[in-house]
Length: 312
Ligand SMILES: Nc1nc2c(ncn2[C@@H]2O[C@H](COP(=O)(O)OP(=O)(O)OP(=O)(O)O)[C@@H](O)[C@H]2O)c(=O)[nH]1
Ligand SMILES: [Zn+2]
Image (cartoon, rainbow, N blue to C red):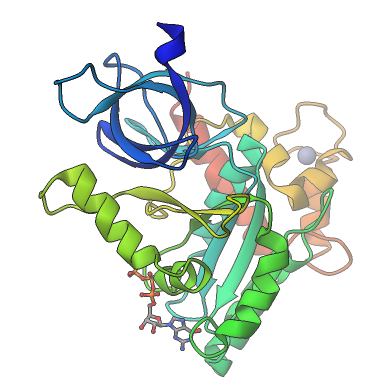
């Protein structure tokens, strides 16, 4: 039945159901064949319409190979956010005060999946709070590594056009997952970049839930008519579990730590207590002069212990 299978893109998902956008731009509700297969937004799939007279719902026959998969994992559960991403935009704000641990976790997960992160700090109009937040982002603004993380100051509420001008060159032609804690302006961002997003979301949730009062968890929006630029909106920034990452892989996922981990005396240095450790000496030299900030190092140590606990 290969000829009856068509290629599509998963643009929304909720529980066991998903919305597949077909090659001609039509959107169809589908469910995956087989209990174990999991479909996530951004997946390229082969799907099949139902036999005549058997309703509207199609089946996803096969998930095509993923370029990458962004997910978090706690002790019990894995939660996939999206697949086939070019980058992840982490949106935080001057207020509410952001958790640096949460930010670090999302960045580590992005590095582990091989996906480039961007950071945007919204509500730059709240001058005092912004100044403090911007200062706390200093280690991220000068992060070592192949290329530093872009850190963008935005005021989506007060200066939307300027925000758009800053974001567009970075987003154009790419698929970007937007993540952020509640209240930072994520809806404001999506509505600014995707006119009509609110209506689309309502339509999709209604279709997927067929009347049930839950909202869609993750959705992909096209930002241009040519469908070359996409934004994926996903909740779930809280409790960002990193249990899929081995403690010994942690340094590699933190560019400022990694930059100094090559200078250690022992090849299997954990950078926690060893003599001749390049990381520990960079922490001692402080956040200036290419050092490592005390907070970043404490995040590294804390996570190293956390990730070590679940292993045997
Ligand atoms: N001062 C200021 N407030 C802003 C800015 N952008 C958004 N806000 C406000 O921040 C609040 C949260 O914005 P939303 O866009 O609803 O944020 P959200 O991240 O989607 O929040 P949830 O719906 O809780 O997930 C709203 O009251 C916005 O008006 C900004 O640039 N400056
Ligand atoms: Zn070391």
